[in-house]
Image (cartoon, each protein chain N blue to C red):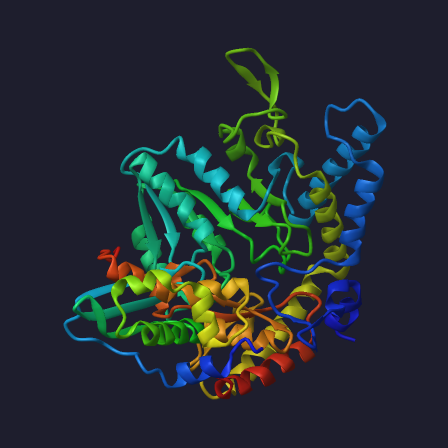
Length: 124
Length: 405
C-alpha cells in the first residue's frame, strides 16, 4: 500500500467538501503541533443531524483528504455518530499506509470536528 | 576527489538503502551523521575506560576523568577559547540557552529588555519569553529585511540602556543567513548588554575564534557537528562566568557542603552538576579531531559549493520558491524552499520514497514562518559527507514533485 493512496491523491486534487460554509451552526479550528497545519471545520445541523459540512485550511494532502472523507462519513448522521468514528475507520477510507509520524494529519480533522460539535471556542 | 567523495566512506549509515534507494541524507542541520571514528571512540570508552569522573580513586575513574577533561581541551582549541574554564559541557544548545537565561535572569528587573530576532529558533526564544514573564522584563525582536537579513537600522533603534541581553543566532537554521554578530556584539556592549550567540548552525561549518569574537556566551550542540547526541557546549567569557550564579545545584558543582549552605566549585565545574555526559564528551572529542583533520576552511568551502549548486539547481525548477539569501557565500549550509501547490510535509514524504531525507515544516522557527507568511518549508542541508550527486538527486526529484500528488 502506498503512503499517498489513490484516494488521498484524488481527494487532495478534487476535494468534495473543501470551502467556506455560510452561517454554520458549529465551527471550530485547531492546529497540528507537529507541522503547524491548521484545519477549520464548519457544519450545519438539522434535527440533530449533520446537514452540511465544509473544511478549510492550509494543510498537507493527508489532512485534507482525511477531512474530506470524514465529512462524507458524517453527512446525514446524528452528531453523536462522530463518537463511533475512530482513526482506523478514516484510515480504511483513505486506503493508505500512514506512518505513526503522520497519524496526527489523519486525526486533526476528527479533533476539529469533535471540537465544533462539542461547542468549543477557538483559542487565539 | 571532493571532500564529500573522500569522507562518505567514513560514515557507515550512508551505505543504507531507504525505500529501495541509496540514502541521500540532506538533513544534517537537524542532526548530522557520525563517522566510524566517533562511534568507535564511544564504544571503546565503554568497553575499556568507563567509570564516573572526578572523584573515583581508581584506574578507570582516572582514565574517564582524563578523557572527559581532554575533550574539554579539544573543544577549547576547536572554538579558539582563551581558557578551558570557559568551556562548560551541557546536553545541547537548548540546555545551554536555558542555563544562561535562568542564571542571567536572576539579575533582571521589571522594565529591563531582552533583544532577540525574528529568525530565532524556538530554543533562543522561549527561554527568554519565560524569563521575561518571571521577571517583568520585555522581549523585543529585530525584524527582517527582504525576509532574509536582520534589519540593523531597526536593531540600532531597539537597542537601548534598558537592553540587558542580546540573543541572536550566528546562522539561521532556516534561511541560512550569517548574522553580523561582531557588529551586533560591539553595539550591544556599548549599550551595556550581554551578548548570547546561538551557534548551533555555525559551529559545525565555520572556523571559530571565540577569543577574538565579542560574544559573551556562545552555545552549540555536538550532534550537529558529527558528534553524539546528549552533549553540547556553553562557552562563556571568563569574567562573565565568574559573575554568574550557577543555574543548578548538585554534586560536582561544589567544593564543600554543609547542611544549610555550600561553597561553590571553580569554573567550569560550577556549572556542571551531576554526572556529566562522559561518553558523549569522548565522542565529541573524536568528532572535533575528525573535523580538524579535514580543516574547517576546507569544510566550509565544500559546503558552500554544495549550497551554491543546490541554490542554482532549485532556482531553475518552475514553481520552486527559495527562502533566505541566494548567494551561498552569505549563508550556512541550508537551503529552505517550497514547491508551488505542495505542502512541505507531502514534499518530504515523497522525497523519502526516493531515499532522500530532507526536513519539512516550521523548523522550530514559527515566528519566522509567520513573518514569511507560510506554514513551513522544505529544507535541504549539507555536511562534509554530501556530494554534488546528492544535490543532483534532490534537484531531479524536486522537479518531478509537482506531478506526484
